[in-house]
Image (cartoon, rainbow, N blue to C red):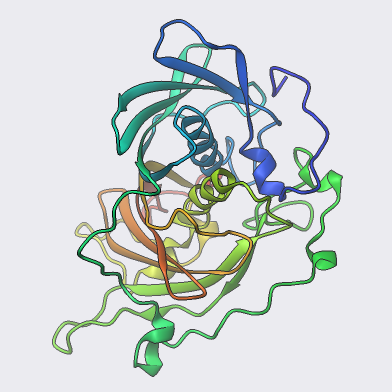
Length: 349
């Protein structure tokens, strides 16, 4: 059984992705020791058709929900460092154990571990700050391409947000196995819990004497459906979003890929990547008031790939040009070997 308890009815005021990140406190909530709290997934976890396990973004978003429930309402998450250790079983309940590592006047630290049968599959350290903390004398951020004075990086403005009738989703779309992720090969049309407006890859700006070796990817994105008014839920969905379509778009970020041995070449399409998996994932949240019920502009780029690993950096701006989050992900990939016969494999988003 994928949940410990019978899932409650679907809440129409929440977007489909929000349901996947909801957690149920264990009763009693404080167990084992005085500084630990335990939660379990409220709804069954998705197992996307291209993947071999549940989607890692769910673990990130749900961990934010778990950690947030152990700090005061005036605290917001500003940093999260995640490590993916193994792939949990999507057909069994997940347990989120939160350790209260530190509590200070202006901040708090929580360590979250996701377990099944006593085995830790995912861990994250979450740092919180007071939303009312005094402002800094230094204020700076990277500007989005909409405000840059160059035609090469011009990204069209976002399309208008659809009417509520167009955004409304039926209850069956939140059931396990129905709401899936766009991607490789499935037996039915995929429905992504996020709406994407992707733009063609753009070569990264470099000095004239140093040709670019990577592309920059820009997209407008927002969740499907209607988001609730919970600030925690918006931050959790943003955390989940940072893990969507990251490693699988690596081929689009690389220009003239090569390797020292000549045997390994980064494939040109995601379908040629038999295996991709996240190793670690770090997020900096810059704006606790960010709303995920409108468009965000996402910038993706890769600064390095080699030895079977890669780095992908992301930046997220709202429509007003405020930088709301920065993310760096390290992943592992197994590309086709030209001297070996291809083996059938499955990819993970």
